[in-house]
Length: 358
Image 1: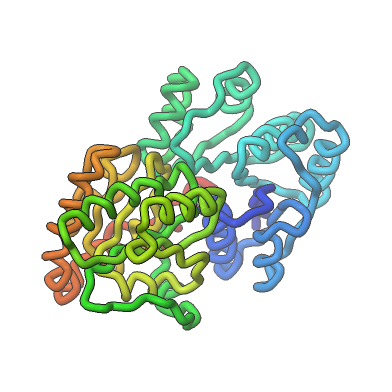
Image 2: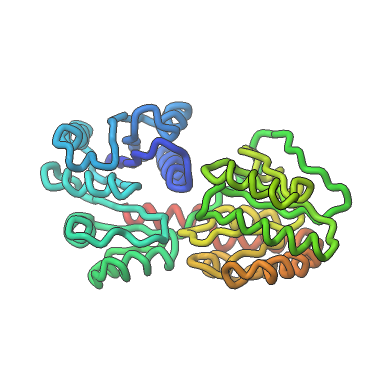
């Protein structure tokens, strides 16, 4: 049987690492020979070790494709392990894989891209994607469009396969219990679940909260997550005297419990490759308001409980929160979102699509 390597050098944990870990684990449990190549002491490596997946650690940085010793170590690893298929995660992983393929026979060199931001348009990236990489997997049509449009390589159209992220409801349903401090208090409870960053746009909740407060709406906004925007956001909340309206919960592990406790899921990302938390919110039968940007329309298409709003139109965003809140009982009682997610993001179907490329 072919030996498959998941190559992900990110030290931190995010959507790409979640996809690599869960996909590697599923294939490993199906009997495929799997090994994960990652950075030293990365979160991905730790989690793979915990479940028993074979791992290899190599120190990799953003410029490692220019480091002959690092490239040699990766080539040696691919050769010694007789790797037949490699799925790379970061642009640096893709570059190292491309170079390695010139010296070591690898049957399938795959770049999996989950970010709908343009790839830097330069000669080396064009060479790697156009000539050296065999297949490209993207998580949305929006991501595909950004790759083709920016690189201006029409040949990539035949190389790119759109495979949406799957939803593993069994893992979701069995998350460990965690106490989450959300008080009902007969108020409208609005929730957001994302890394605190400019991309995720949580600063927009300041304007949304001010509008709802001026309308004398009883509400509370809970922001779950940590990130580089945390200090700035905390200062903004205090400056606008919104401490009673906006609560920073920090990192939470039990997404299911968090979503059960809120009324409306508000998604303020200003760009997304694939908003996985939107799928989690739909599965929890929650009304959703999100900006009409990048892949959001694609992910939410067909879901009756979602409203899309022009980006930064936060007055309308707040109004739509009030409107979709009226749908929450219908969505919950009829399990509209749960059934929708099971059909659209079915794990078995999507894993079969991935296996078809390997």
